Image (cartoon, helix red, strand yellow):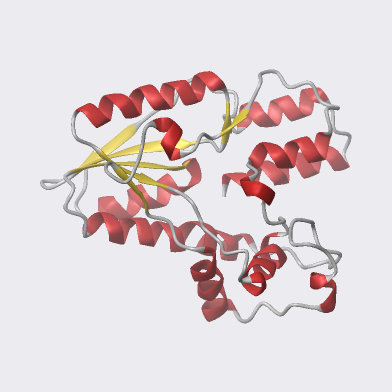
Length: 241
């Protein structure tokens, strides 16, 4: 969801006179220039859960701080949940439905969020600080022994949407370009409540179900910041404090 917020901010600024000042203000408001991450924790009698509210774009100091905190928690036995909605390029129908739903092309060669901004601005904006894509779990020192991806797949997300809100019908114009490019079709924007349900609530439920059935006593969740309000509220309902 953080990605959608960023794109909304930037689209407004592009339409109404995109300036370095306005872009930098948007990045500051979104926390992309923060140099430290603020962790929070909830507990019950069985588990301790720490939240890492991540930015998918950030400063080097921010990600250095994240790694330092991960290293500290690893030493005291924490297990880490990571985020990644994985898609299969061979399932082109699911990929194109996702593009129609979000308006965002499939990332080529695992390109990160910075790719989208570089393509939008093409070096025309001077950023206040140098920003980087969120490092992979491996670069944070995470592997199968101390972490796992607890996200849903792209197909599961599209299937969930269609089960609740109806089939995403592809048109000829959806196939005119590579799925690495924005299609020619003009699709109606997805309602915010629907978007939150699919991109936040559905994924949050998967995290919570995994957590409640997990044998690990100490868990750290490294996820986009927008997810944590819903996760926290649900855990508090279930007796966490």
